[in-house]
Image (cartoon, rainbow, N blue to C red; front, top):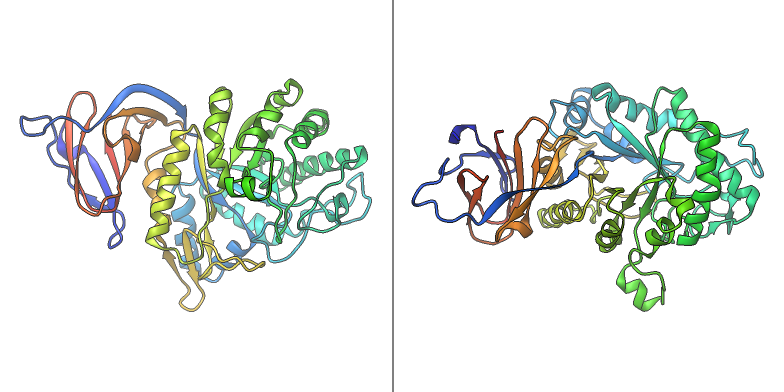
Length: 450
């Protein structure tokens, strides 16, 4: 294999996405034994990478000049752009990055959903989504609510609380999802997946609603699944997004449900299982996915919301996020979805939480800033197209690397050097050993031709 045909890109704190030259193109006497080998094993097929369309993101994007706004949108979504995002999320009603509280039907007692409306979405979310679809018509979308309409909850509020567990309310809430998919279809936008609730364990000051595993099971089995069947809704139903209680909550708050119990409670019921196409995990759900994927390997898995930091967009946090990507793919996900793609500096939510974003839109300069986590996403998404298959690895660098076979025949290895000194990677593709001198604390993407 010719050395010149190998592509290698590296990012460090000082310089992002730098094209590098590989060392020895073929195995020689001084190449040494490989310390990472691509094996013949194959695992899950990649479905895509993405982010979430939120109101504050659209506001931030519009702080930019038209030229810079197009630059950002092209970088995010264009098939020949940098990130090539192809699987994205949107909220059903207010998320914690909405401008204010709202749902899509606040008419008390409207069980028939006669007053259901996405009029607000036509101002903030739909224009954002259409800009993405204009660049990538194959973009797939999934949606989840943070809270049901307040009149469906106890107590009656957007935050905290639970869904009222009354048959007429449950029927109406299933219809709420049906109306959502239908309304977006009328706008020319296909919703490919519905995830029942954002963060089923989260009892937050921003829009939220707590569910038990038993409630998720019964709602999907007895209400949502049958409603989709009756109305001919083709959107898939996913068990998500599950954040799972973390160990601190289990120990200090005496929460009895541990790790994958939410998913297992639902999926072990045949009536609910038949409607479910996949499982979405985020945040503390990273502790549960391994067990769920081992128990139900036939399902698809998604990391549905990247852990979002503190608004400082540091290199140190980017290193943590890089490892989250690796953890989730190693444990079976087919797709990885970031949270906010674009925010203003510090990324402060309506409810006071400052969070990271891949891109910061500076209203003072009307210029975008491409943050370290933008390049983390690029290291994974730029060459790993939908249809790529994860490959097996062996050797001492296996814990720091993920490999894929792309549809075009290329093999892509994404690897970090977490150490404070340079390290030598001797990568075997089965026929040759390729040598790379990885810089300290660097992210690396290596593309071997087919």
